[in-house]
Amino acid sequence: MTFIGFIGLGHMGRPMAANLVKAGHRVRGHDLNPAAMAAAAEAGVATVGSAAEAAREADVVITMLVAGRDVTGLYRDALLGAADPGTLFIDASTIDVEAAREAHALAVGHGMAALDAPVSGGVAGAEAGTLTFMVGGEAAAVTRARPLLDAMGGRVVHCGGAGAGQAAKICNNMILGISMIAISEAFVLAEKLGLSHQALFDVASSSSGQCWALTHHCPVPGMVPASAANRGFAPGFATALMLKDLTLSQQAAEAAGADTALGRHAMEMFRRFADGGGVALDYSAIIETIRAAPAP
Ligand code: NAD
Image (cartoon, rainbow, N blue to C red):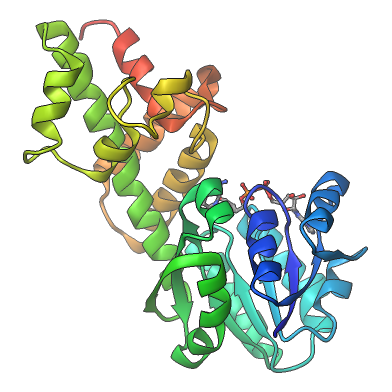
C-alpha cells in the first residue's frame, strides 16, 4: 500500500484517484472545487482542506491540473514545502514542455523525485483504468511509479528525460488534430462527389487512408460506435482540449525552431471553430466548419 496525495480531482483526476483507492492504496485528495471533493470522497478518497495537507507524509504526490502555471505554482507555493524529502512527484496534467521541465527541476531541487506523466484515453479511459501514460524522467522514478500508473492505466511508455512525456503527448495530439481535419475534408469532398459515407469508410478504413481517428472517431454518424457524430457531437474529446494541445504543440515548435505548418494550420482552424461556438463540442465536429465553408 502506498500513501498518495492527489491534487486535482476533476473529470480525469477523480476517476484516477478512485482507481488507486480500488487498488488498495491510501489516497488523500484535494481540489478547489467542493463538488469535485464530494465526488472523490464518495469514491473513497480522504479529502482534505489544502493541497499542502494532501502532500504531508505522502510517499507519492500526484497532480492532475489544467495548465503549467497551476503545476509549477502549486509545487512552489504548497507541495514541495509540505512533502517529505524523497517523495515522488508525478504530474499527469497536460502542460507545456518548459513548465514540465521547470516542475521537475523544482522538485529535484527540493530533494524529491519527479516525473511528467500526461495521459491519453480521456475520461472513459480514466474511469476504466486503461489510460496510456507517456512518462518523462529518471528510470528509477519510473520503476517506483509503475505500480501506481498500472493501477490507473493500461500502458506506460517511458519516453525519456524530464519533459519527454509532455513532448510525446503534444506530438501525438498534433497528429490527431491534423488527421481529423484530413478525414473531415475527405468526407466533405465525398459528399460533393456523390460518394456515400459508408463507401468511403469501407475503402479508407482498409486502405492507405486508414488511421486511428478514422476508425475510432469517424466524424460522420453510423460508421463506428464510439464516434461523437452518433450523438450530436457531445464530447468525447472536447474542442477546447484539442485546441489546448495544438497550442502547446505550436508553442513548443516555435521554441524548438521546428516548422510544423500543418500543425499551425490545424490550431488556427480549431481556434476559429472554438471561437465560433464549437468550444464545448467534440473535436470531430470540425467537419461542420469544412462542410459550411464557401467554395474557394
Ligand atoms: P478539470 O478542469 O476537470 O480538472 C482540473 C481540476 O483541478 C479541477 O477540478 C480544479 O478545480 C482543480 N484545480 C485547479 N487548480 C487547483 C489547485 N490550485 N488546487 C487544487 N485543485 C485545483 O480537467 P480534466 O479534464 O480533469 O483535465 C486535467 C488535465 O488532464 C488537463 O491538463 C487536461 O488537458 C488533461 N487531459 C484531459 C483529458 C480529458 O478528456 N478530460 C484527456 C487527456 C488529458
